[in-house]
Length: 405
Image (cartoon, rainbow, N blue to C red; front, side):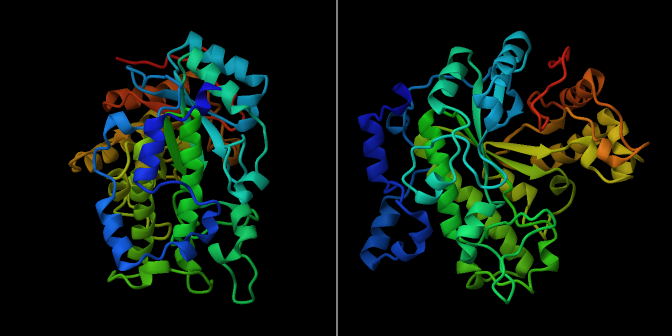
């Protein structure tokens, strides 16, 4: 099984930088205290800004970054391991689409394939929807760029197993949102390491990019922060202006830490982010600052589905009815923000290939090839040639023009 071959150089790197994963990352805090000497050693052995290529992990899977830019689709674990995969591969081979974003850790905290992790909680919540070796072999054979989607802080499984890593009411009851879902605490380094363990195992399988989703606090957290119990870790000790800045630093620090930890695995690191984060100074309640996150990733993927903007946003009365205009207005705002960064990431937005009938009569339209093309054309007109298509059921529109000069 070539994707499980561990080269000598890989083992040397992992030993050298002290990155062998903890058997139980939940206990990371208890095992992370260092003596003065160890602290000095850790500084000496810290990762260089540019990790030497000869020491990077080689999964044995060879898939190049698409020369024309990534044009991808979202794929669930069920689709990746089921009969729909054949249809999706055919879509890749007969159009300009060339990438798949595959659920590895989903919105509940479940794992869609065997990650070969020693972490007991990961093992417990693993469902073998897809065979990773077969999946990556198929993607290699067809040169489909593989992106591992890892949902980070929305994680009901970890929250229920370890409420101390989540948010609880004073009576000890676990907080859930209106859909009964729980989040885990972005201030917790143990939570960081749990998700980075997942990312490392996905990289070992042969995924060429790690995409972190739900890199944020729960929506509206600023309205309930004072009524919930949770640790702020080391952030209580930092000289930060207020709770808002604590949240922004925690989210940004996770992204920077994850990218550093993944350097030896030779993968791109991307983050999904709310589109409105680029149109405002910051999204304080959820801890997302577009510029700061963008400065610490290779790819930034804003979710800019026309259906997700409020009525009147960008001066557009009903955004879902105007896919070109919405994307065009958004990209003007994003380009302005990214243009101010010294080392801007690749922009690869999520766009809409579904019909948002839940918006109610008069507020939505049926999305077909014209509506999908309108969004892609708006990106191209603003200098962006990469995108990801979202449809929860993985049924993508046929006869779409995916490339505009």
